[in-house]
Image (tube, rainbow, N blue to C red):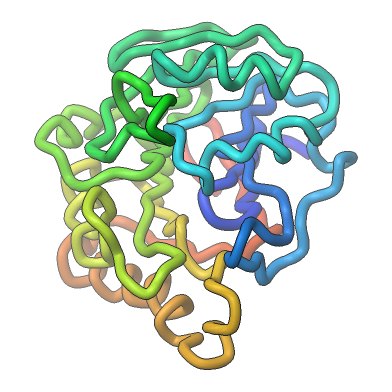
Length: 255
């Protein structure tokens, strides 16, 4: 298929780069408790030959145990320090625990853990040292922010990122602390200055019954992010991908 990334909904993105497949925060089920997924899930065939899976933090919509169990093969699993034992119970691959600044080589790619400003607790008994984003570097640079608020060191990514995957919304009636809304995500795009910014973490999951009653609340963040970037970071192109939609990556740039 060549170098490309595919948005699979919420924070789940499949990055195909330099012959290596990396999946972020797999949330592949149709429903979790009272939260409904409004888009079809990816097939096991579409997720074949994964080299690595990156988990940004322990919240259920980013670390879903049933999704990990459903993955084909045994990809390497990359998690924040503190979540390794939990993840190892669900998936057979080698588990790597990382801190911000740590780097891991996977095939021809380098995966660098990046700080994320977000709550790290999953339960009373499970937490991690930090939430993480990841910078995936090969012939292109792809930054996956995970869940995060703005933080000063985002500016250190400038010049290293071709495509930035930035969270712009949520799945509940309110956007809690540790998340960016479209305006703050546009500020992040301005600090990072990627060639392309793609909004994630919006429009996929809905509380039961609210899609019909308040669909605009969940569908608005993507277009609002495009408008905010045009006003605050006009040099950054915004591409809005629907779940299952892909975009190609070029040599050191995007196509």
